[in-house]
Length: 239
Image 1 (tube, rainbow, N blue to C red):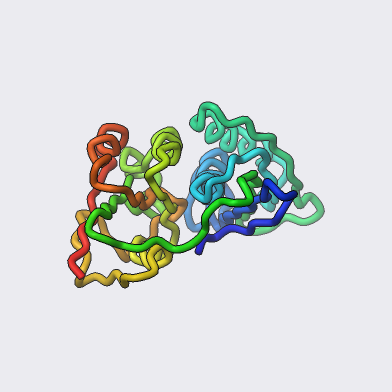
Image 2 (cartoon, rainbow, N blue to C red):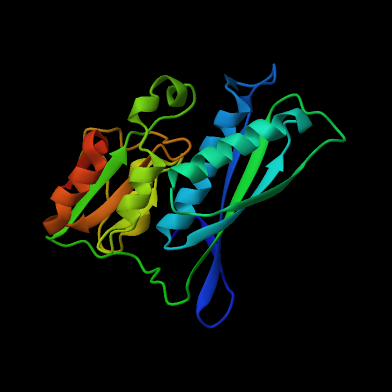
């Protein structure tokens, strides 16, 4: 159902592992997108930590695989620490390794976030009914858009607040787009371009999880709109 690995720790808890990769994005001459390594790490961390939290887990550690060179490490660290600060109440430790024997022509970073969740956490697909409401929080952006349209990216603090609501199920939107994530969540309906009405592009890549899907009962829509503000985009299903 989700892009995570859940491993039993004991009878009460599971370890959840979520990962995100970044390639050809950074400060090397051969990179397709030129941005600081702080930015690279921040958005790679976002993708992994959002997957972890949306599964019901509480993150406690980050493991970084750095192929950008030793000189990039401090900037990478700053980017991840920025993300951790945005989560406000979460304490996460960072470790990792740098490829220092050989230099790559393009930047590459791999990040894994580890979290803990209750072993009883429900991972079954959802059933759509008349009370179901769906929204996309944030906008799907990829590549240079992430830099140029930063104001459309949902903050991690907003994501964390919505995940704290018991009635809401969330899933980050990655490179396969909104429709893919919707069809990952639900058991009894299939979402297509024809039966979905939205003000955001449902097939477009959301790159480093610049937005996420929220599924909730209609009774709390006002609460989600209050938390999300301008990032709220309702999805209407007409199947």
